[in-house]
Image 1 (spheres, rainbow, N blue to C red):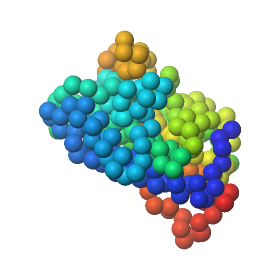
Image 2: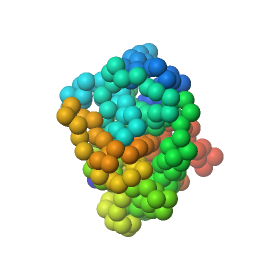
Image 3: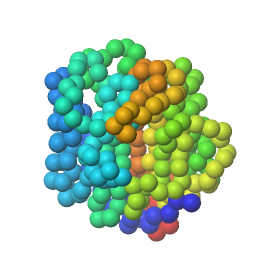
Length: 261
């Protein structure tokens, strides 16, 4: 069961989440034709450290970079390097930081220049699938409701969701219980209670759901080499509903007692 966070702990997590989000904003602006994924990694590390945090992914289980940069058919865990982005690419930017002992973790897939209508629709659907999952983060719901909402939204539009990689709890560790699959029946798995924090992260494919990991041991690609998109928010379950931690607390008028303070 996920560890419940106090209101003060959620405040620290929100600060970490905002550092990640502002860094993603800078990375999206920098993801232009001719930029390399290594350039983006340098920007990410400098931004996080300037904000007084430290990169969460660098050397985590041996990962060699601050940023996961996954281009086109790469699903997740792409290692930044000399690869130049091209007009029409899409690139998944997955990033985390640690601030005062608490983790932030978010991702978005962005366009490099003008992209195809197919790619635009994939990105839009994945963003919407994430929001559908976020809406399930309410007391009394279950983790299975999140995955069901994501899967239903994506598959109704002709896409597939990845099974091999899932969302997770987050707090003083980057990956905590429970796991949060992006598929499955509703009404199953752990019950959601105020103070739980979950990293919800749909990975949606234009083709089939199957993936494989390349020889570098990290980069996961779609088996059919069709496009994939990835979006992620860290979300707190509160008494009043979901709180995307990178955004202002949305229930201030109802009081600050979002968690078991």
